[in-house]
Length: 91
Length: 311
Image (cartoon, rainbow over all chains, first blue to last red):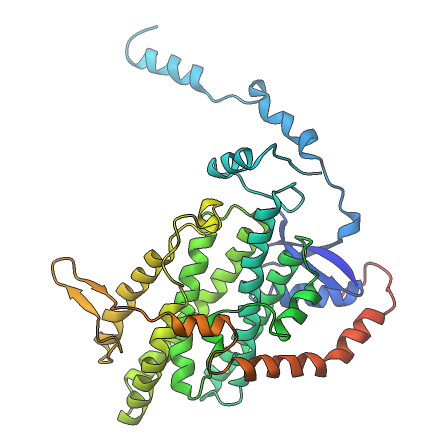
C-alpha cells in the first residue's frame, strides 16, 4: 500500500487545493479511490495525486520568517492620508 | 519538522490565540490522545451508520429515495474513510488497527447506532433527528477546531450531512402528509428515537473538559442539546406529532422549549456496548470485515504499477 495526497481544482477559478489523502496499492486504483472519495459531487474537474513520499516538506522555521517583512507590502495608508488632506482643503 | 512548544501553558496559549495544530507539529501527548480518541469515535460512528444505511437500500420505498439512500451509504462510508486517514496520520493506531478495535468491541461509536432501525419510519426519524443532532455537533467542532487536518475534512463531511438531513426532512413531510397508518408508524418511531437522538449530545459538559479547553469543541453539550430541542419540538408539533417527553416545558414569554429530566442510563449502557442492538451490530460488522478479507489480501499483494496511468 502507498499513501497518496489528493489535490482538486474546479473550473479554472481556484488554485489546486489539498482535499485529503488515501491508501492504494497503485496509481490506477488510487485514481479511482480519489474520485470516489473526494469528487462524488463534481467537487473538481482536475485532479493531482501525489505519492506522499514525493512531497517535499518546507520546515516552518524556513518558511515563516517572511511574515516579518512589511517593506514587501504597501497598505496604502500614506496615499489615503494624502488624498484625505487634499479633499479636506489641506495640502 | 513542525513546531514545538516548551510547556503545556505555552501550547494552550497558542491554542487560545487561535493557533491551528498540524500533523507534523510536536503536540503534547495528552492533546494528541484526546484529538485522536474524538476522531476515532466520529469515524467509527460514520462507518456503523453507513452499514445501517446499507441494510436499508433494498427496503427503501421508491426509486428516488432508494438511490438517495445508496448515495448516503457511500457518503457515510466515505466519511469514515476520510476520518480514518486523518486519525491514522496521528501515529497512535494504523487504520487497520482502528477498524479491528471497532469490530472487536474495543472502541466507541455513537449511542444511536446501538439501536435497531425496525421500520421505514425509524429510518426517517434517524435521517431527520439523528442526522440533525450529528450535524449540529460537527458544526460546533468545525467552527473553531484547533486540529487543522480534522477541521478541513469536516468541511466536506458537513456539506454532505446537510444533503442527508434535507432528504430526511423531505421524507418526514411525505409521511406527515400520508395515511393514518403512516402517521402512526412515524409517531412510534419518534417515541423510540427522540431520547437516543437527544442523548447523542451527551451529558452536560464538565467544567474542566479538555475538548473545550483545547478548542476541539466550541460549544458545551448542554447548549447544543437545548438548541436542538428548541428547533425540533415546534417543528414536530407543527406537523401534528407529539414529543415523548412528559417533562417538556414551554415558556411563552421567550417561546422556548426545555426538555424534562434526562435519564442517562441508556447512554451509559451503549457506551459499555450493552445497548439493545450493540452485540448484533458489532457481530454483523465483524462478519462483514471477515468476509472481505480477500479484497484486502489482493490489494496488499498487488504489484506496484508504473506511475501516470490515466483512468
